[in-house]
Image 1 (cartoon, one colour):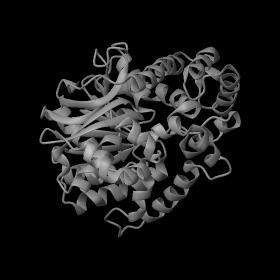
Image 2 (tube, rainbow, N blue to C red):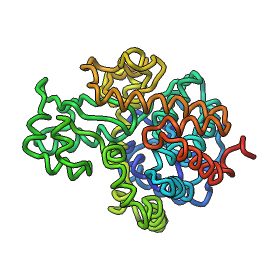
Image 3 (cartoon, one colour):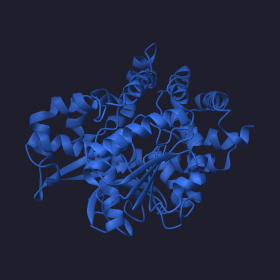
Length: 413
C-alpha cells in the first residue's frame, strides 16, 4: 500500500513515521510531499533512518512533485500548515486586540487558518486518485473535513484528543488502552468524554471521584466545572469556559506558535545528524501526542475493513438530530472499508446541544467563506461564532483577519 503524507516536511513527521514503522506492516511505500525542499531533505533522510532502525521494509522517499506523490496512493494523509508558524503566530495574536481569544483552531484565528487551508486541501484532493482515502489531520479538522466531504471526496478527519484521554484513563486504571472505549462526543476541538467503558462498565464516575484534581489540572478547566458537568471536556473547551482568563494570560506572553518555532529549529538541527536513528525527547514537546498511533489505526481500519473503534470526524447523518445531516461531528465510530459509522450513544444534554449547535452553524459558514471567499461571508462566520458574536468585534476582526492573510487568499489579490 502506498501512503502519501502531504506536509511531509513537518518536524512532526518523524512521529508519524515512527508509528508506521512500528505498527503498519501493510505500508509498502511512503512518500513525503512538501514544497520546502531543504527542510524536506532533512526530515526525509531522518524518516528513512527511522524506518531502517525498526527494520521496516517499506520504501520511503520524498518529493515536491504533487502528482508524483499522489499517484497510486491508496491513502493520503494531510498535515499541512499554510503560511507556516508565522501565520500561526498571527492567528494567535490579532484577535487579542478585540478582547477575543487568540487560537489557531477556534475563534477568529481558527477561521483565518480555515480560509488559508481549505482551498489548498481541496486542490490536493482533486489531484489524488479517485479511490483514495483522505485522512485529514490538518486543523481546523472539522471544517477542513466538511469541505472535503462537501466536494465528494472519501475523507475522514482525525484528532488526537480522544486517543489521548483513552491512554491517560487506561494508565490510571492500570489496564491496556485497547480495553477502554470512550463515549466521545461533539465537534472537533469541542468534545466531551461522557463515559469510559471497560468490559461494558463505565469507569468515568470513579475516575472523576478519585482523580478530579488531576484531570482538572490536565484540561486546565476548574474542578467545579467538571464536577457540575459530570464529564471530562477537552482542553479546547477552556477557550469557552474560561475565555476572559485565557485572553488575559495570552496578553504579553510568547505565543504557542513562537515556542513551537523554537522547538522546530532545534529539532531540524537534531534531524540533520546522520547518526540519529530514534526520536529525540524534544519531539514530545512539539504536540500531537499519540497522533501516529491514531493515524495508523484509522488507516488500517479503512483499508483492511477490520471494524476498529476510533474517534472520527464524520457526517452527522442523523446521529445528532438537532444538527443537519451534512454537518460534521466528532464521535466514537466503528470503522471499515466503507468508512466510519458512529456507535449508538445517548443524546447530548442541553448544555452540549447549545454549544455544538452554535459552533456547527459557524463551521457551515466558515466552509462557505473558505470555498467562495468574500468579506461578507467572513464577517457572518465571525458574527455566528460564540467566541465573537458581536457586530463591533466581528467587523474589526474581519478587517484584521483579511489584512493579515492577504498574501494567502487568492480572492483578495
